[in-house]
Image (tube, rainbow, N blue to C red; front, side, top):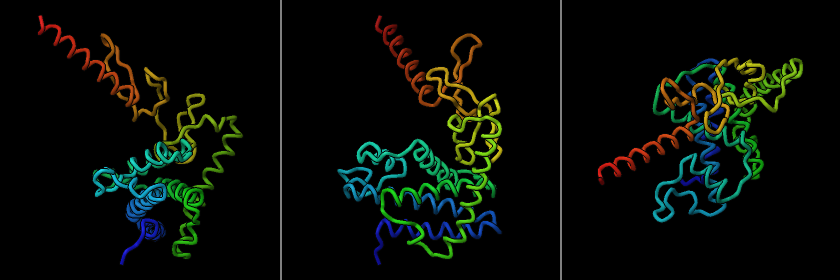
Length: 261
């Protein structure tokens, strides 16, 4: 029996929904729900790549054996296929890749509320991607009972977010300035007036700016670097790596100059 990329994606989605339903009574099931949902997302991105050109699903187009991973699929869809994915969609896909890596390769903390919120965010993206780019409605391709029961998870997250928008209005908070929460992935982390808290999941975390590009960073994203005597600055990962590379190049140039004398 041979199944297509899209059929495989729908199979993983159905399993994800089944585990999400069971997660209401057994928290460990959320691990499998998220893992299967991420796999469904990856296969869906690959299917869109395949529609553009079958060779694009392979990591090395000169040696078509291994297929692309989630991030490579995303890069090819945006850079080669020119798909117009929003910043929120890109953040969701990157979050999916990180989550799978954590679940499979390291310790993973399971919290039912956070898992529901993350699952709902990922499911919302997958549903939008199917309708927009694959001309398919998810409720037409998975077990109808699973879909109806799992919708309660999505509706739970939507209700929390709608309440958040009401709070924003009451408290004079501009929703356009809210950051994507690194914990639940909803655009509800408020930095205005140094609140530094997510209005959906309750995460509190210090916020800073990259000393180079001035992008707002969550504390977990800070990369500290000594820039003077007892002076330490925080950088985003990209700027941090650039600084390290520049310092290494300078060191090697100085050593070459010194040894050349």
